[in-house]
Length: 594
Image (cartoon, rainbow, N blue to C red; front, side, top):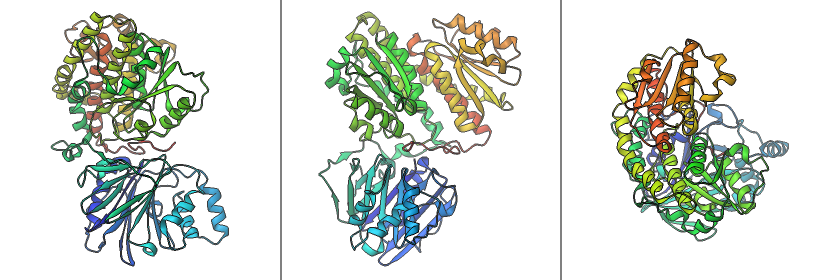
């Protein structure tokens, strides 16, 4: 949540920082701000809304910090935009200061006057209180008083020619450039300038100068494996459509070099394979779309992996007290690897001696450093707030982990060969669906007047029904619910009428006949039905209003294919309603605060 960017070096800082802010808008776009230091002068600009192209001539200087905001504490207005300043100390911050009210009250008693409603402004005041000529020393002392999470960057003309940065439960990286250094929330903001980065760990502080950097302990330089054009929209109108259209390639990338004849090769699990073989239960933890991927993984691991599995929301399991022991394993599913609720749950499971693994997209993220192993999804950067290709990558990887677990148990060579053979063909089948996107768009146009939708599925496709509903809610602002088909008669059927269409996930699988019965229940209440069905299924055309066909595949792999038309359905619905698709209201890409 929120984007931080800063530069110190030989070049003019403003163009670099404003470019970084544009790259980070997917993390927050309620408001933005930037300050530039030019010796003793400070240029400060704050704006509500998305970044505008403005003149740069007045913003001279080689030191700058900027911020894209996603409001958490304090409303959306110019005074609450970052950077926050007090007495010549400028701060940008990502995270939540849990004890800011108490700190603020104490500071007010000392005569401090606050200009915003945010928790962040407290940091600037605390640094001012502690300053005695050295900015990093003042920041270090100030942060000792803070309870909560933070990624911060601080500058001041009182101790110029440096940027002080620090991290606690909120991502911060340093970009090592030929002409200086960049601080940012994630690699998308630095990739135009360098691929060499250092990732700060919790509790660390760094001081950046134009020709040097200092960290409290030695850090390894990593290499970003993305290309700069991978974070460009190219010829697409929106990042979301570009990312949906990459879903077939994501499957191919996730499986490349990992599929053997009757098993999978997952290097990130090698050091944990003995404990996995001994494990009697798998927990899968995620939030939002990551939870729906985890829920899909629950079914996959029970059916293919031959092991008991439970999916849980990170925001809930972190507060519960399940019985945990070292004969269990937990897999944390996150695109960013910085999801606050996941990380809190991860600590809980680690403390209990449970084997912790990750399914992550971001190399060097907190989740990848804190888990004992895991598998990268290899999706490349995902910029749109609504996750699409990352979800496809997650369930593809969870399928492979299920095969890995199954071969340790009772999954036969023949059955493993069948799943792997079909998995090799899934990218081609996904591409066929993507090539059919205009037909999906045509169906969307028939349903634009409706304000409520129901999504139903069974077994493997129940989580996909929830995913489809979430996508429609996120970017169209249309009310949608996802439930198991078998639960319709236990309550939701009361809402079905001619004004509430149902999207039914009904591929040819073991619960096909049951889903047909559910569709008949909806039609008997005058409800319209859009079916996601297997190619060649002419029977279903006779009872539903519209059909979106997917290629035939084995039951366990249908979720990969059924999710793709639902992503396109949500995209075209939002497009027709002229929504801000890549940056839906009230949402941000990476939820790094509770």
